[in-house]
Image 1 (cartoon, rainbow, N blue to C red):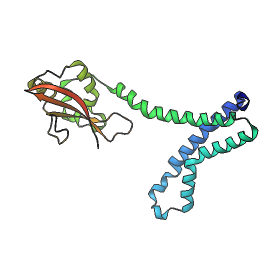
Image 2 (cartoon, rainbow, N blue to C red):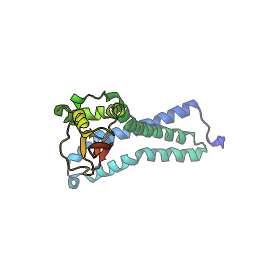
Image 3 (cartoon, rainbow, N blue to C red):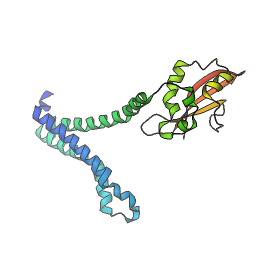
Image 4 (spheres, rainbow, N blue to C red):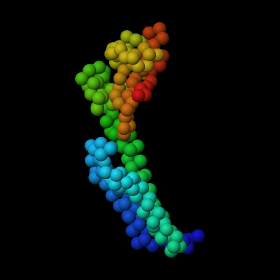
Length: 208
């Protein structure tokens, strides 16, 4: 089996790097050179440019296929495997970036709960940097909301504005856009009362 995967450092790093370069070059060409096509009506786009765009979408795999065919002829698959690892490395890096950056950013921007700031409408209405979204984890960690009276929560968090969302909750506080790379949903803090005592408090996700 090992005779079909005869690696040398030069072969490995050359084709690993080639895989990375091909993927990155393809990404930037599609992202920047062809993005101007968006401003041209579909019916007015030259047919050849559409074919080029389609080819570029598959070009890393076309190159991999060519390298693989060469490896079949040479009966040594070190080059195609190294090239594939280069492509995979970029894919994994992008996916890791998309998932990890929002998580790291969320933790980095968290702040201690402050009742006055929570109720400050100017800070609350900042969609890109909502103070409530930054403080809610500290609020839930340090304050046992369940068991509080309605008067206590009114003093601590204020009375929220009426909203048409989550009608099964008595109080609903808008926190901000959901914490992820691309967000189309909002996070809310929902509170339920029974006999003017909080029986449930949880973060809710508004699905759009």
